[in-house]
Image (tube, rainbow, N blue to C red; front, side, top):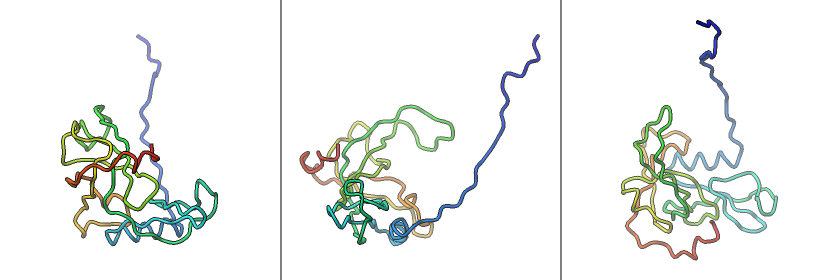
Length: 162
């Protein structure tokens, strides 16, 4: 019998501090008010939500704050059927890219309160917020998005996001 050590489990962790810049700060303050705040490019007028520091198309600093949403349209999605360590979401579940109304860039979030087989491109969705007393400056204030019951968006209205 060999006494060679083949593997060792060593718990480690990393602690860090995130310092939000001006673009992220306005977005995070908006989340504390139950709003989505994006930033508009002063050159091409694209609206980024969540905001970034510069426009990916023009390379210029983003400008004014723009309130968008809160509803949006599913542009793409994935039905997840594989469990992972520490998982808290019951499988299957849907992870989707949502184009928030008034924004020009999709964001990722969960789709719930419907069957996974009913989720589709163009489905209109709205955020479901945690109770206000649990809010922090975080996108985690939104537990998931759910269908609005509105008619699906026309494919041409989001086809440029695919």
